[in-house]
Length: 123
Image (cartoon, rainbow, N blue to C red; front, side):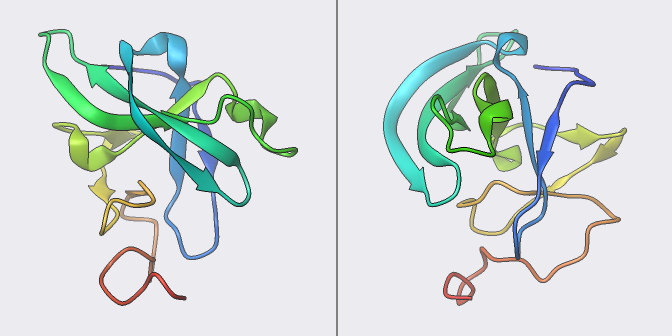
């Protein structure tokens, strides 16, 4: 769906990294809903369309008017790795973060514990 060396990696407390890719590198369709991040602002959601026409519903999000400090995310989109057949970082297939709320990408060099699993949202 996308192959880029122009990703922005965002790190937050108790989360594996989330990678934001250039929106222009993906086939996206607006999807229902929004959410609010106290740091980055209001997010909007997208369906991701594959080259074969397959659609991953609400599999990506973006901050169209990010809060100060996150301006570099304006024209970028993050993807839930669990919604894709495969996501890779540097050739390594990533594991998705438990619970899918945060959308983190876990590789062998990223160590938890992470929010997302049952009982961890209140950390």
